[in-house]
Image 1: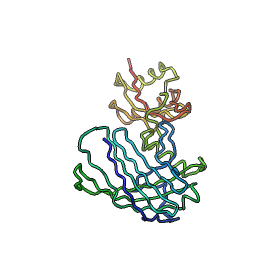
Image 2: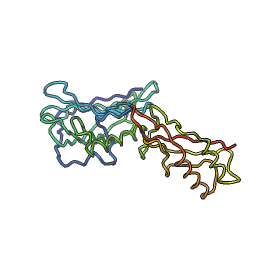
Image 3: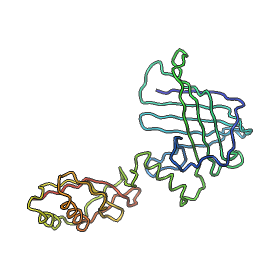
Image 4: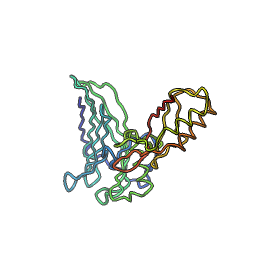
Length: 272
């Protein structure tokens, strides 16, 4: 289902505010930028010049099942010529409603016709949801912000913050930097025979099957604070098991784009 609106604004004006809120903070505004993440290569911000006298700023997001697209077109006088809002789902149906942008408040940190580098903006849309016969269903507010990172130093704190937040947002990593779906999963390098013997000697009632979750870091070692036990064992025994797992196992770490990364895996050890 594709729900589309196109609304001409004529002489609505952009506000230039060099001190608009920093992009690299978490707030109520949806973020859009042109930093491609390392797996999906998603760029949610695109800036183009349809003519010499117009600029189009496009913001997009897709979850795979739903998504939205916002397009804002300005002229050289920084008048807002049109705003388009598209809403997408993977369900095709009849009598789809339409979404019409009734109002927009847009701030930019600079004149984009003079300089695109580090352009950022912030907007609030008032959107009317209209049914198939033209009746108003409801009105909603959509808040968005964007920033272009073209030509920006990739070692800068702002770039790194945004890149890491994108990885979390698109479920590439969790908030601890652990990759959820690496190209290559970690594999055990060391022999477990001695480990099993040592584990078995820790307790006369040691479980026959030990189930845990562990994080393997970029160096191929288990991170101590990451070990989560699914098998019920006492706290003192947990500490001893964790110590052995760290000391007596070595791993080939997971890889993304042939670079070693952190990943989380289930670790099941059978004790005969």
